[in-house]
Image 1 (cartoon, rainbow, N blue to C red):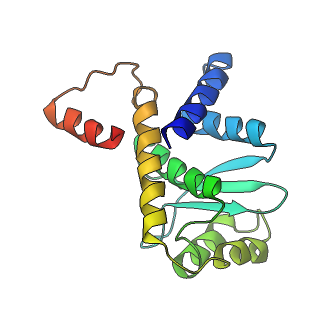
Image 2 (cartoon, rainbow, N blue to C red):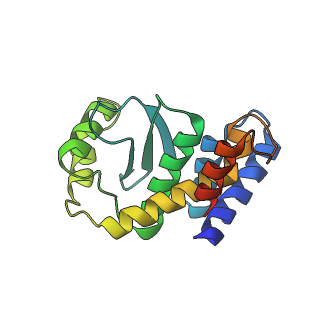
Length: 172
C-alpha cells in the first residue's frame, strides 16, 4: 500500500515539477493515465446529499474518477485515493447501485452516456467492508503524503497538538 502511494506521489511530483501550476489531484490522475495507458479523467462534482463523495467508473475507452467538489483539498485527496485503491484492486467500491447509480446519473448528465455509466456502477452491488477499509486507509495515506502541497505549505510541522495527532493517525 505504501509502495503504491509512494509511486503515485513520485509520479505526481514529477508532473508538478514540470508545471508548477499543476494541482496535486490532477497531477495524480495525469500520472495514472500516463503510467497505465488508460485515460483517467478527474471530475470535481457536487454529489447529491446522502449519497457518496467519490466514484470510479471504467467506461472502457477511458475512466472517470469523480470527487466531491464541496470539501477541503485534503479530503478530496482522501476521496481520490480511496477510488484509486478500488481501481488498483479492479473493483468499484460501495458506490454501486442505489445512491451511487443516482449520483452517477446526476453527475454525468449528458456529458457521457448515462446508461453506460449507471450500468458500470450498478454492476457491483455487494459491499465488502474490508475492501472499503483498505480503500479508506489508502486514501488517508495518500492525503497525508500530499498534505504540505494541499495546505499550500511545504512544511511538515504541525501547527498544534491536535493537528499533529490527527495527521499522525492518518499517516498510520
